[in-house]
Amino acid sequence: MSDNWTSIRSRWESIRQAVDGTLPSPGMGAALGAGRLGLSVNPVAITGEPGAGKSVLYDALTQAIRTGDRDSRRSPDSEKHRTAFRSGSRRSQASVVVIPGQASEERERALAATMGGTASPHGIIHVVCWGHNRTWQRSGQRDIEEALRREHPDVDRESVRAWHLRKEADDFRDLCERIIEKRAAKRLRWMIVAVSKCDLYWDRIDQARDHYIPGETGNESEFCTQLRDLADETSIDIAVLPMSSRLIRHQFLPGLPTQLFQLDDEQLGVLRTYFSDSLQGFLAARDRGAPNGGH
Ligand SMILES: Nc1nc2c(ncn2[C@@H]2O[C@H](COP(=O)(O)OP(=O)(O)OP(=O)(O)O)[C@@H](O)[C@H]2O)c(=O)[nH]1
Ligand SMILES: [Mg+2]
Image 1 (cartoon, rainbow, N blue to C red):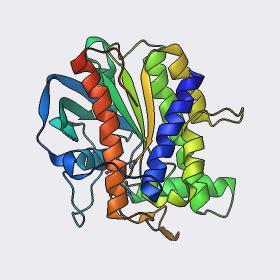
Image 2 (cartoon, rainbow, N blue to C red):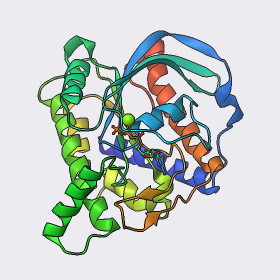
Image 3 (cartoon, protein in one colour):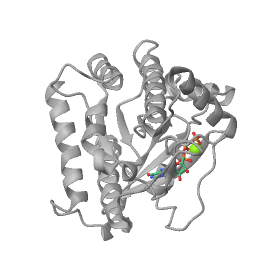
């Protein structure tokens, strides 16, 4: 699998360079073209922590949001859609379920139903955000603050980020265990780790890459360890892609300084184009009858 990590990393690097303008960006206008529609309907699940950006990512991929639209809300229930994802002149049909992030009976039911046996998805888009989760409710924000104050009296943006990253890794371990050990998601062929909200930490994008893509060094994050296990124990095709769905300032907790976005609409378009292209590669692999997609 180590060669795969090298190619996953180099795909990430091409995208970074295209966003920074040091590589020509792919044609954008074509993304809205009608194109030929693949025949099969691909079941896809979008998973990830509360406030990671799942609902907004779905909207961005289906071109359903425009600058200035109102912000999203917490999704207590699964969101189910039937859609066609586009990239250039290619289109593929998909039935998409966005699993709610917050621990609840509904989340458990949705995960069990989605991952269970024969009805499992062909692909998972797992959304992470390098600790920039939005905590929707005031009570949840207070819980985080109290837990952090017990560890250290000074709560800052980095400690909140670290708190979310620990939880994100636990959540990912749970997902990987469901896939590997319980042999759930029998039809699963691919997973895209969507490293979302990159606009909030583009100045540290290399650190985020090393947090999510296993590398050559021994000092890997817990997330990398889980992803490596998943790759070693299954034949799932994996991509890890930087992504940004919309430009909105981020407040880690009330009272802490706001994090500003660092990209512009054009750069967002580049990220979305690359993401859609990779997604299309996985979806179209099924129409072509190939065992694996591309990254
Ligand atoms: N800056 C920035 N903010 C984002 C991005 N994606 C989502 N957000 C914001 O992050 C918050 C959470 O996004 P959602 O898509 O609603 O999160 P979710 O994963 O669906 O959360 P749950 O419904 O709780 O599971 C919202 O305030 C979004 O506007 C992004 O790419 N960049
Ligand atoms: Mg949501």
